[in-house]
Length: 106
Image 1 (cartoon, rainbow, N blue to C red):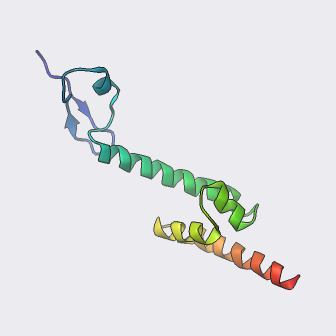
Image 2 (cartoon, rainbow, N blue to C red):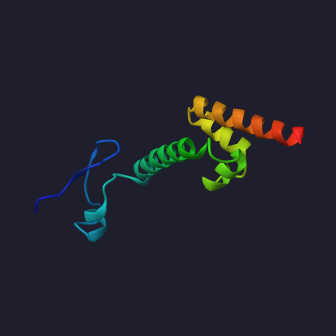
């Protein structure tokens, strides 16, 4: 009987079924949970960056943060720095400062 194998979409390693050719193996596209997790994180990071870029200039930074699942503008800013998006984090920081100055002036 010929063993069926696949190539992992994340790391490129060839992998086979662990318990025969079953429906779970047919549906798998990653060799492990770690590779699937890495793929999900990369896609999630890309979606976060895209969403923030789209709305950062159109709303209060805390509202932007809540829309993408963060507690406030500062926590979103810190996350953007962590994932290597300093320009976007700085833009959010400038907006935070601008809104803070508006509140203090009124």
